[in-house]
Amino acid sequence: MIDDPLGPLDPDFAAAFTRDLSRPPCQLYLISPLDVTGTFPDRLARALDAGPVAAFQFRVKDVDQHSAARLAEPLQRICADREVAFIVNDSVSLAKRLGADGVHLGQEDGDPREARMILGPGVQIGVTCHDSRHLAMEAGEAGADYVAFGSFYPTTTKAVSHHPEPVILSWWSALFELPSVAIGGITPANAAPLVKAGADFVAVSGAVWKTDEVAAVRGFAEVLGAR
Image: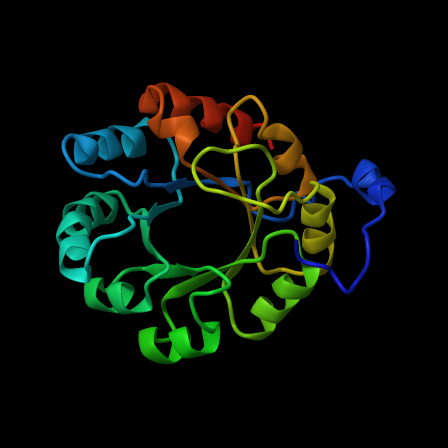
């Protein structure tokens, strides 16, 4: 568990917070399942055609870079055809190889400054910040383009030990223009409090890929469109 040196947030702040409507509406950020073989490219195309999606994160594990690139390339084309940002999880070198639109870094995946030097000024760099305001501010100072908080809800997609309250999104959006991403167990049924709290993006995986992807994306579109 990360100790936030800034101390606990006042829950009354979240209760009093009203989403700043001058910020862009909250958008959907899809994360791939670990298995993107077989019919997954067709599923991705259907999902992206079902409603507005801002970004797609390519997240596979335990494969070499050559194999990862081979799996990524058709998915990257699908995203490019629909003007959806293609983000690579964890690997700056794979993002460079693919000419990806961005890379998402965990706390153990390197410094955003080094990633910027390698990838250039036009690539989006996101950083996982768990439940820590301190880590988020450090990421912003290091040049990240967005910060990600979570897991807000129970999830089976990955093992997590950090569970922030939505108030962290309210605090961030009240003080910083840099976008925030909410992640972890988010579904159309429970996304609304995170949108109200100030999330700029909701990142989802299982809620889309473990069910009918078209219905799921349409369900998120209804919630996010309501602001």
